[in-house]
Amino acid sequence: MREDNFRKLAPYVPGIQPRFADMIKLNTNESPYPPSPKVIEASERFNAADLRLYPSVDVGPLRDALAEYHGFDRACVFVGVGSDDVLATIFQACFNSGRPLLFPEITYSFYEVWARLYNINVKKIPLRPDFTIDADDYTGMENGGIVIANPNAPTSIAMDKGEIERIIKNNPDSVVVIDEAYVDFGGESVLGYVDKYDNLIVVRTYSKSRSLAGARIGYCIANPDLIGVIETVRNSINSYTNNRPSIEIGVASIKDEEYFREMIAKVVATRKRLTSELTELGFHVLPSSANFVFAEPPKSVTAAEVYDNLVKKHIYVRHFNIPGIENYLRITVGTDVQVDIMLSEVRKMLGK
Ligand SMILES: *Cc1c(COP(=O)(O)O)cnc(C)c1O
Image 1 (cartoon, rainbow, N blue to C red):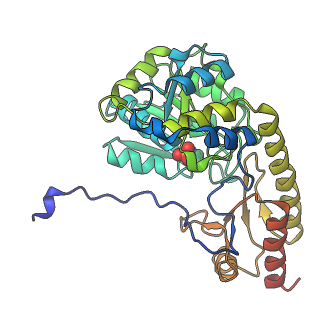
Image 2 (image 1 turned 45 degrees about the horizontal axis):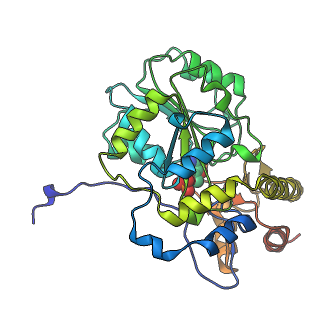
Image 3 (image 1 turned 135 degrees about the vertical axis):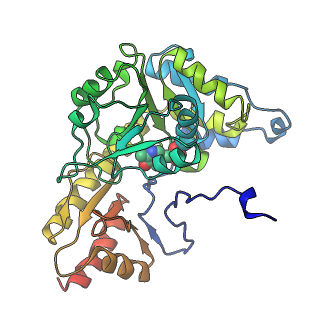
């Protein structure tokens, strides 16, 4: 066959999913805790015989539950198969002008992959030397859209809500997407601005703070016109996205606010301890508002060396071979026990 039949792409490379019984997996920002008992009950109640039927065409019950939970009309909510699916659909639906899409130079690397896949021009904006985002860089520059993860990944740093509002307000002609995958762990949500600005889309996921990465549930909230544009693209690809079990699980999770808050509090408490212990070992740890920390090891070792050493012990963290962050490690906040084992290996390695 001729080579020119095919697309050539550099895909997004997710963190590895090793399978060792003894492994400590701190590399893909999953929750170390199980989902709510209400989710477990819902999955046990699920009647597999119903699988002969297609699921609800607009993810109906889950869409309604999310609308009620966040206090929006259902017409403001779009649900997809993880927020990656939601984001990919937004990229296809909203960034078609030919003008460049703006996003930070260091951010969720899937943004660039989708931009290439859908032939979207891109302008990557450098971060400040301290890895923060300068809102001024996103005002007064012609663009065809803006995407910002808040808190940002993999830096873990959250941006002030007022700064984000300045970006939204100063770009009334383009869609501004705020990816709030980690917002439950300490960032300030801009959901409250959806009613005020018709160019804002807020994207959320069940994968991190709801301990449901395996269920593949993500959603976004925006004004009904934007949601309509996104739905049109989705309905041009696949009418039935979320499957029946995931819809029921998604509704059940929303109904257990107490458990949700409890798990987040545990992660935040462990994050605090992880940050102070790493700092004590000489790491430079960025101020995290997420369920992971981003840290540079002390001078005596490199991030790659720490990574390799931990892999030998079946402890997995994330290392990116990307200029500017090649000496940093992204470490997911695990349970206290997991974090202690990881820290003790690092201590040994440093001879401390
Ligand atoms: C994890 C993550 C996502 C995607 O999560 P899904 O599992 O597809 O919902 C999106 N954006 C950022 C910044 C993430 O870290």
